[in-house]
Length: 207
Figure 1 (spheres, rainbow, N blue to C red):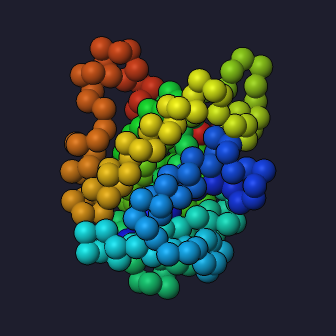
Figure 2 (tube, rainbow, N blue to C red; figure 1 turned 180 degrees about the vertical axis):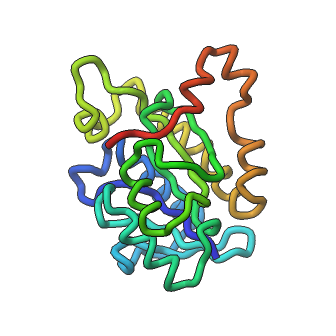
């Protein structure tokens, strides 16, 4: 069994905000895989699908972003799953909007949702699928930035990123995170040519 958890905030007022790209990807994956209706359990919206013969829970914690671990920790414990059975999708302010990065493990990078998960599961050994939302514009606070909708310029980039990541997330389940990283992460040589290598390698948001 695997858990693919998209991070975000519940409620219609947050549905289209940058902080909710994790929810957006999991919703798109549920539609792509013809998942059954969502149900509520473990303080989350949950549905079940099959990916390459593997049972997968698609999960949207309803605890609000900063308490995401309160939902995922008990679920992992109940099903006796290891942290390497967990795949977390979240926004990343230190990656340009629409860029993506898959990681096998790591620290929170300042992202409060990941901080909460680390506190409740006790390990950094879970896969991250990071979707770039870019840095705040001049004069904006981090909170104002992550809780605002995408600009008309960035919205198509996010839709393209989600479409790109659908097979990538399935690949993590079927072939492992290392294989998926090699296949779907931007190549470092190309990043250096574009001058974006440091941004791509940086950590998460601080909200």
